Amino acid sequence: MRQPRNDLDPRRLRTREALQSAFILLALQRRYHEIRIDDILEASGAGRSTFYEHFASKDALLAASMDGALSLLAG
View 1 (cartoon, helix red, strand yellow):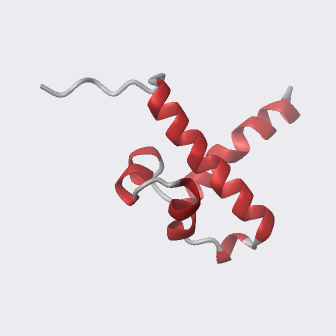
View 2 (tube, helix red, strand yellow):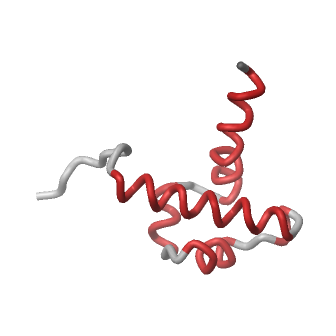
View 3 (spheres, helix red, strand yellow):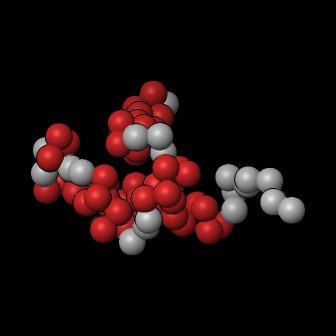
């Protein structure tokens, strides 16, 4: 029987953070259009299916990565 998905699961949070961190590091080195999902996977150590469990696309990863900064600016 499959467990319900828990977005507060520490493993899921670590994976999501690893993907976002890898993306941010790559964004500091390259232009957005030059970053491939394969680059993010390599830098984070995550697999392709894991990436898509967390984000629908590279654009969704960008949006999620900007949430923290934008909420600070909004506050």
